[in-house]
Amino acid sequence: MPDDIDDKIETAVFKLMETTDIPDIRVADVIKLAKVSRSTFYRHFDSVDDVVKRFESELLQNMRRINNMALKARFGISELDPTISMVSRMELLQGNRDKIVALNGPHGDPSFVHKATIFMHDYFRDRIASIGGDPVTRDLYLSFVIAGHNNLIQYWLEVHPEIEPQKIAAVLNRLYYAPFFLSEESVRQTPKAPQGWD
Image (cartoon, rainbow, N blue to C red; front, side, top):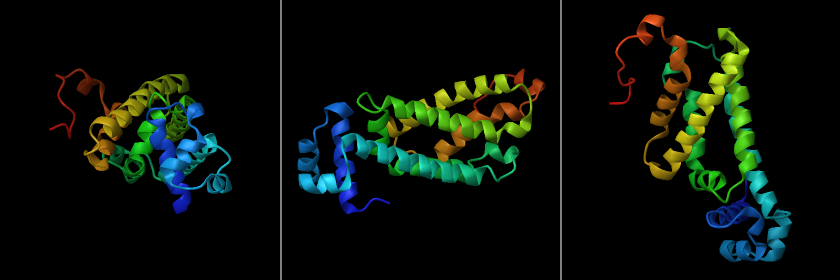
């Protein structure tokens, strides 16, 4: 958990990232915005990139903790509801909203977006492993859904941050898992809005 100084510096870096590419953010601008000295900055971080990488690492570590808990639960129909793990992930992202938006934005870190995508793909692959079926088809499905997942989260945090994490979790759980609980007959019926889209 970062201390006050770490948090001030981190917040300044991510604020600057809204308009400036990470390699172009100067320590002088960070310390001015964070209201700390240059020596204080270097006592806590090696570089601007170090600030970003530490945040990314801590975020993925927290996600890993949530994912590890979720993997202990049996996969079943309850996945269609907003699970505790999905709500926890959304609360974590909402709590770091400004930083996530900057990180995924045009001046952010594309390597992190890629790393997070692979991280979540691996988790969801483990989560649905008990279902069986062709692993390549499952991976194709997960690639499609995770792309939507990433875009939905970015849209939520940028455009509709007022939506509570439980609602986002409910939508994501349905998008991920509803196909596993559809029968051939229900697929062919007249389309209707999913539950919760009222």
